[in-house]
Length: 314
Length: 244
Image (cartoon, rainbow over all chains, first blue to last red; front, side, top):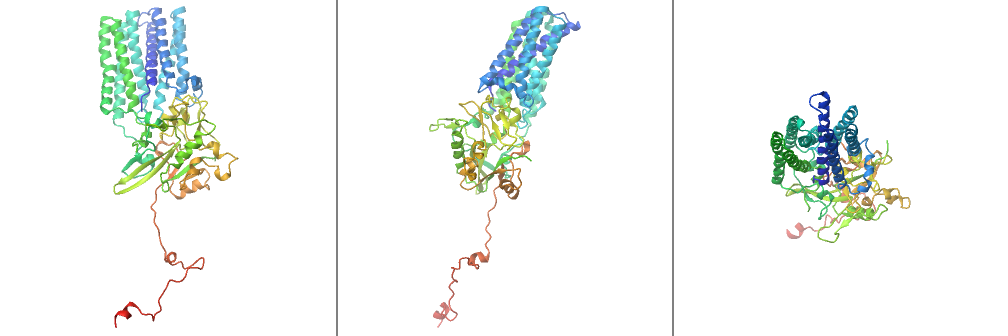
């Protein structure tokens, strides 16, 4: 598949926003349980502004994917069957919950109300991860995507990114929370490494179910396309082929593995030891670049069976 | 059972002339739904939106090869994966005749349905920014101002070798059902469970069996065939004239 940059920005930005919200709520929930001291109200209210900024930016990016953005409101209609429609509904509802949570903190401070609103927000954040992941995982013939690992990785990578931002935010606003937050971030990031590695290993061993034989229904083992029916390009030759070399793909794969996991973890350790939010912010930005590469690779790796019909121009 | 209109394409007969492609384009770019965009039609890299393409495959290894011309359009799947993924409901399958259609006024151009079609049957219109696909000439097949014989998709009308059959595959007596039954009709990529309504008829070995009566025309239908000239037994033969 050819990567759609609007979708890459959408999924990485909202993933970070959802992860940050889960991190904020974890801080409140732990404090409510008495595990650590309650961070300042600003940590939550301004944190929610950050969450909303990320989600808003993601939402904005998504409009660039649409041919007819003025009709975007229609996309909430088919929630009974379409994961995309479900995402379109859950995203603004989650944004509303995050806004309510931040506002409640700002106006009334931590209490039962914020705990309830935040709990609902976390449930919506997790639901949104499922919706986003299932958009890809529900397509059976995109075999690279058709696995629970897709949903798990959207969840874990989004949480890793958001927790890293939460740790940065804690270094600036709630230093008492820093070490715990850093430990949680490291744990989530390592879990994401394991599951993303599992997805890479699975996809490396995948054999396509469709072949040119099943595509045209001729059983002979040797079939070569001689003409695709037109000389210039078409939607089918543009949107389903990435046109990048194997070497470039390997480079991006190792690049994102490096940028998403070991480098931010090293900076996370350094940043939390020095209690320096700029170092942690650098870790977040570096990992975000890596996540862009990761999502790009996620698209490029998927081999669409329609490509079997477009193997030779003429 | 409800109706399911479909095409049956006989690969044994298709000669790859692209008449169905041009006829489809002509009909569908001229209708009420608006044009099918083209860019650089006479330039270096012409590109445009088509509902139907004819592709060519070579089967086997030289010199034992066979050329298969393969027309490809929307298969109007009985279980179309492109329909449930559509977030707006623009993509739908008609209950009354099984045609899979796009409501161009509802489509937001998110391309998700194209990702969800394993056959690559959908093409976005780069200017109208909505997804387009074969409509089975829905604006033609029910048009009562046309003579009944012409109430068929434009591609079927255009095919000079009658490689394209059109009908209801749920009706066991229809021409398409009979063709599927009698000539080994098959569906594309059956592994995905999409149950395409369109079927293809495979290439067949063409053999001619000649019987004696076909050579001699003993039945002599118009009574004008004369007997083959046979010399009289007493007439001189070559042997008689040379062996004196």
